[in-house]
Length: 385
Image 1: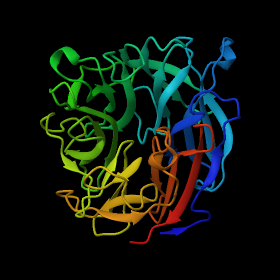
Image 2: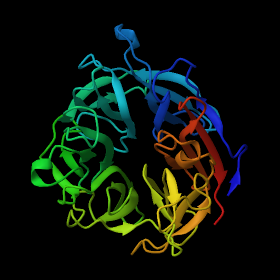
Image 3: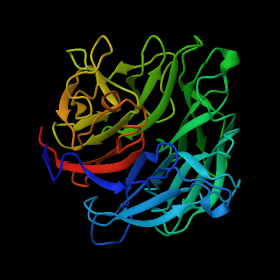
Image 4: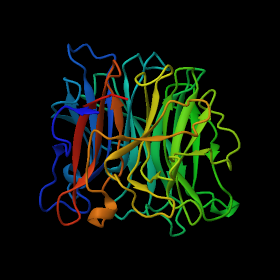
């Protein structure tokens, strides 16, 4: 890959020195294909760790806008919790509707994220919509409600929403779920489908679920493939898979096969596997059917230790049938990973966005600044396979 500039990236947002917690993490980015600006318009958001007693200081999801394909950015707007009065704290996602769905016209932007009170006692995946390019937002619905926002301690939270349009043209929201422990699932990935643009939601379906009480599939991300199929990546935290990233496919975005089937590991022939914080995208570059690219928080070898190039490497495949042949490629953004800096908020997550023509790839992630705080960094590169 040939970079546009600095491989260590530029800062989209740097938290103030007194920012609580991680400062900023979990970025997401979307291209607005229905935007009428002359350039290639993108929107990005992330978790911004600010809170207080005053309503105006409750956490929001900030929106940044670029009109030159992600080369430069400016603060544009924000998404506020207007439903619960808690603040929007964790795991934002953005999605532009490519066609009219329910009450929404093509180009409507949907956002979802976790609304959580200051005492972290509840989790709610709420959906908001913008009909003016992200300038203003209104509450639409709640996809799922869960318990205390603390993972792996016997609580019952819901996490990490992700949108797609299924083969029938309905809206799907995938998410991680810790509410099914009595049935043997420590955490699972499931989804709900909406036939009216997200106003109401059908019953939950399990997509990746291992009923052993230990393994934790989570952090789902979905992309469409050129033949109409869907690809989902997710991490599996637990003693057997140790955060490894896996990929499953679906013919329609709803049926992902047997939930206990974990799919294919995103792993090279040498045994290097991406772990935690997955992201997947497809680009037409690189092969007759294009290339699937996956990013993650760290790259590890077969015994779980840090592999060469961790924090600098994506895994790529042109095998869109079996997904069992992955090669390491240089990432647009290079950063000291969570192993290097010693705190887990680095690289949580690393979204990828190919340009409209597929020749250029933008990457964002949370990178370490100081005192275990993170800023949101970005970089882009020309794709050369």
